[in-house]
Length: 74
Image (cartoon, rainbow, N blue to C red):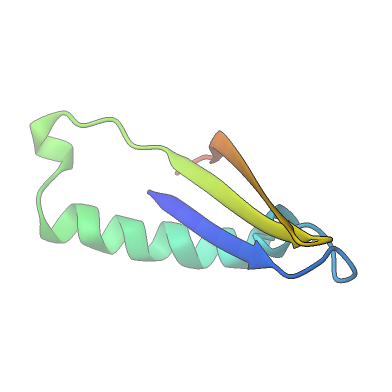
């Protein structure tokens, strides 16, 4: 699962900072529902939660991708 966050600048923090514990719990809850609905655990899949950041600063666009940004068990 990948959460994508965009920021026009960093005055409100980095894009990844927007994926706080409350947001993570919402994502995890939705992921668990999807995993259960599709019976994916029984198929032996591994799951991870990544964060893709997009930042536009001074007319340039920057990308950062963090694998395993948070865990299903959190």
